[in-house]
Image 1 (cartoon, rainbow, N blue to C red):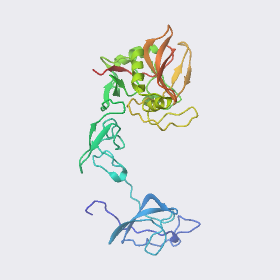
Image 2: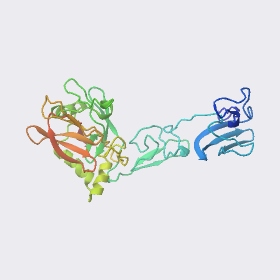
Image 3: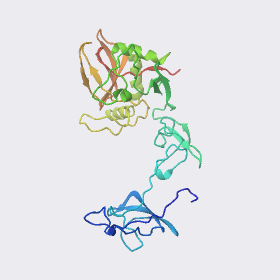
Image 4: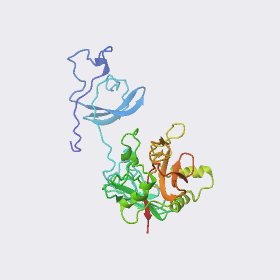
Length: 346
């Protein structure tokens, strides 16, 4: 037992010992397992063909992986009726040791994104990871597709103690999660039809509350102006010369899951290369304070307030949606949208 695996020679029950009409019952209740005290036979989750699955066969003179097909007496028929032992295993991603058999390309000893080796133990785009035997991966930043040096996620906390990831994009630090501050001085709007909405999508704020909520993060943090939002889109679209390239840029902004197209089909091509992690929280459109409003575009667009009003009753917002380049438009100030605060990277 040098490896600590503690294999037990439980043997196995071939399927021909079971009643065909009642497959859970042995034909002979006193039947004993074949090769009990001689071998351990463990199921796997990999199909070998013909409805069978591979098995791990541990015997005194050999340890083999077999296809589990019927044949000669010394082979085991691994059907649904046959009874074999089971050993469960856990993915060891994050233990600091590279496990290539489980598809890992790095393991830096944690399950965090943004540090070069992501939560699934895959090297992140723009990073180079090296790893020696029995040591954690060391990841260094090369550069992302925009020529910008990549860097780990930062963090900031609001005055209520809620922590948010941050990311450098261009010359500014942006929140990489939606604001979820729920102080007494602001109203946290939510989509009541979505379970645990605020935990994932943050709060939806009126334009007035959005103007003040970023101060909860401390000095330097503010609601982006229209010009800052435009600089954001220019940075994203700088090298785009076609609608196809613009769509590819959009995919680099959005989370990998949670987005759907106009036909209700999931968008699976999101890469979140920039680390902005735009979430499709939708928005609540309202024409006045008393209006209950209509909730629109959940799972289809992300709408973020700016600090710039375009008229007496409307304010500009950054609009990220399916099959369109990120752009700016305006909506009534009583509507409720998401907030991403920003500060200078200097």
